[in-house]
Image 1 (cartoon, rainbow, N blue to C red):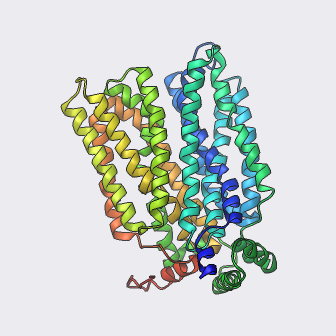
Image 2 (image 1 turned 60 degrees about the horizontal axis):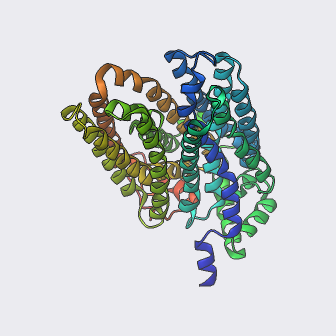
Length: 471
């Protein structure tokens, strides 16, 4: 009984490894959130003198870079290892942050924002994969979703530092440089921290380093569990012997192609909810509804706080409920929130109550998204791909996530200006309904299954697509 209890809870070694690795998630969140407060200052005539188009280009260049980074980050982590890839990303985070801070003109800023996006995209793939591979089946949900918690914590820190610096700093001309340089500090902590972290045991076994993998497992499992798990992983790799090197041609196999379809679908579902329209343009949304600028900025910090609280609740919930219903309930909540924002904006335009109703609905939206959709998305993506295709498969899926993010980031202000607040949110509500249909039809339950059992489940899908139980 003592061994079972020990196995069900992440031990200190896993907690330490997860804490260090998730600084990649913290950087992900900070660098995607900080631009919201930095843009108004860097746009001034005596700074980068940005036009509205160039503001959009500076903001979205990171998203485009993230799409590329997600695609190649998975391949690089398959080739060089999860740990080494995270260390390389830490260096890229640091250099790109310094480059953005010292950028003398718009062209240099866009280049370094793109490079920063490469690091963000690479981290969005590699960190969850690493966390999934060091976790046991019992604690995988709690461990992997810590990265999502660190992402929203990074966004909260960005909103908070922006608000503090914007309020108390006297030299507003160069304040944006201080906002941007802060992200270099966790990059340094990530690099030095990863020096103390071992490589993923699953990756080590895939490279023929079974003894080293066993040594790692013995540090993060009980002895008996380590012996059983290394046998499971070895057998899984042996059954994949026909696919020695992961390439895109592997996705021509029907059962693998189905997993890729599911991974891309889950990634797109995450973004078409419209979450980043609120995270990137929350201040503008609240201003459109009737808030003043200062009130909107304060509310933007509140959105960050709510995201962290909801994420903590979501991590707690993952250990107690199944993934599939959790995602469906989350989507129902976000669709309802979007519909109500659209309805209130249409019927109460110009009234004094509209700003507070819109704020309450954005709070409700983020509660459902960060408490359900966000945790399930990243956990599921880290679970469904077989070992030898995990890097390339997750990389491809997250590439589509970032491309969708990029498209929404560019089109949202255009929609807001052309069709208005109400119609824009009706559009996102419609997309949310499509997301619900996709999840209800295609997403299997993954809770309580080892990564090897999930692989066997997808392999057992026959030509008639008859499902078999994985419980």
